[in-house]
Each structure stands twice: as C-alpha cells, then as structure tokens.
Length: 343
Image (cartoon, rainbow, N blue to C red; front, side):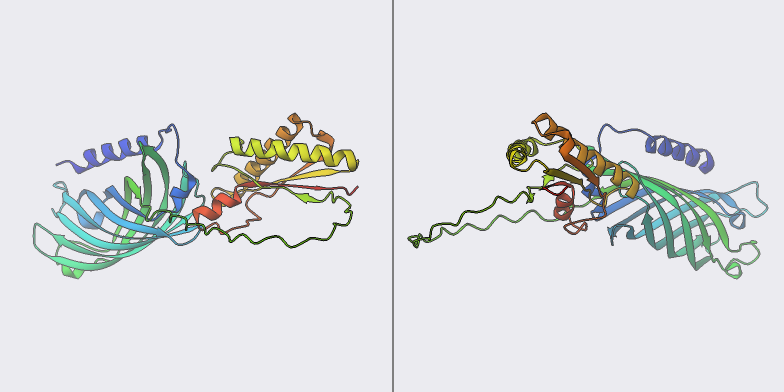
C-alpha cells in the first residue's frame, strides 16, 4: 500500500471539507458541551523509522474546563509500511494514549481556533522483526473546529496539525539505525457534542390562601419618579434582531417613556447593549453596539425622540449571570433600558 499517496489524498479531502461554508451553525452553547472525537491521522514519518509515511486513527473524549481551556483524553493506533528504498526496511505498528490541553482563541461555533499541547505514551513495535519499545511523547500544534447541524444532530468538523517528539530508545532496535522520532501529524475528524440531562419540570404552584385585606390608609400624593429601569431585552445567540416578545415589551416601554417625557422635558433614555462570552472581545463589542442600536431604532419608530436616546456598548464585560451555563449566557445576551431626568 502506498501510504503517502493515500494519506495525502485523504488529508487534502479533509482540509477541503474543513473550508466548506455551512448554511447555519447551531447555538453557541454547543461549543461548551462535553464531546467525543474521532479522527483520521496522517503521519510524516521520521527518517529514524526507515519506513513510509504512516496512517492512523484516534478516538477520545473531552470536556471544557472554562471559557478558554479543554482537556481531552484518548487513544490512537498507527501503521507505517516499510520504505523499500531505505537501507534498512522497517515497518511499524504503534498504539498509544494521550492527554491534550486545548487553548481556544474563540468559542464561536462557526470557527473555533485553538492551540494544543499533548503528552502521552506510545507502544511501538517493528512488525517485521518483533522488536518493541514503550516511549514517552509530547506534541504541540494548531487547529480549529467548525460546528454544524445535520437535521437536529450537532456535529463538529475538526482539523489540526502538530509536531510530535517521541523519545524512542534506539538500543531496543539494534542495528536498525532507530532513534527518537521527530514527526508531523495531520488530523481531520469529527466532534460529537454531548448534552446530558433535561430541564427539570417546574414545581406546581401552591394556591395562596385568600386573606381579607386589611383597611389601608389613604395614600399620600407622590411625585412621579423619572428614574426607571425597564425589563431587559434579550437576544438569540449572535443576533441583534428583536424577537416578537421584545417588540411587544418595547411597545409598552415606548408608551411609558413618551408619558414621562411630557412631564419631564429633560428626560434621557439610556440603552446599553451586552453579550455573553462566546466569541472574541472585539466581535462581542461590535455585537453589543448592534443590539443597543436595534433597541434605539425601534423606540424611535414608536415615537420616542431620538435626541433623548443615548446608547452604550459593553460587550462581554458586564455579565449579570455566570457565562459557564447556558442559562447564564442567555441572560447576558441583553439590552438594558433606563430613564432619568438629569441634564
């Protein structure tokens, strides 16, 4: 088998697939789910192997530790056919376990690039001679994941390239010219996000016991307060479009603001846009600006004076809930609306 031609062809096909633009990506939470992963590996064989380039496969699983870091554990197998043009004709079968740490530059599901460092152990066997070794290895490289959906199934296409050093003991293979391996590893594969559990059913509400109201004193006349905070406007992941519920809420807000403006000529309306932490800081800053402007434009259409409205954009910098949960990230994708009568 000519592993060089087969391997390079499959790698080229995988890289082409990795560059394909998919119609839509799922909600950003998928980038923070635990996952299983499998890949096809093409290994640029070290000269110390005296073999052809290798083909391999990997299977493992990983978990997000925080916004930036994943840990992944898995096993692999590799096959190197003999290079008949080499002075020493040697073929290899390798098996191993590895632990990877992946640092993500972004968790955007459309394109999530990462740097990776891995450690592990390989069991190497020259199948032509039966000699073998157990060797420590370390690797480092760069890669990216693109998440997509097929029907209702979330998947990710992953590709990475690594340099791998394997501390092979040449004395275990006498007379073969074997030494430590310095190799490139190209990988293309799938990620299968796992989502465990379902939302708990809400507890039944207890009916309050009706108690006759106590007589209330006559209320004192109150001066209406122009300082108000309205209900937050929430957005879908990576969106600045207003939902039907948001538009209904803003209809009510606009009516109240216009009433207050008649009583307080100096009334100002402050609209602040916010995001969750999925994506880069620069991208989220721009997204929060679009959200604040979407609310402003809707209020103007409902009769609020544009000169009263001030917009602010805070990106991901002011969360009101943990970004480590789907529920928290949903709360952080918001625009806040406040009024005051200060000059």
